[in-house]
Length: 91
Image 1 (cartoon, rainbow, N blue to C red):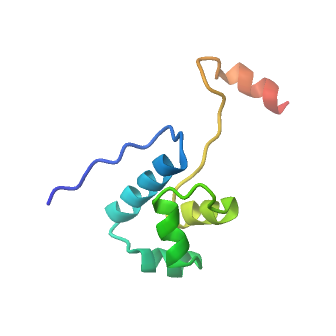
Image 2: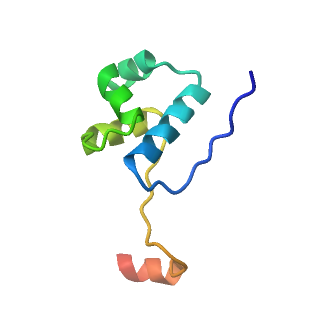
């Protein structure tokens, strides 16, 4: 069975994020039980998160992402994300 390529990038819904995380986890050959043990998260939470549950607790979501080696990057939409714009935001 061939591995499916994972399309990382823009996430617009809880379902998008869950599908991406599930594909990433499976691509690494990890089970829900393994991630649960590594991140001290319940398998029920992880399963609901991967299915796109919209009320998933943000702290737990971030913990699950860290456990799987994923980062969250927030940036403005559109073409105005130049380095000078970023400097102004953080000065």
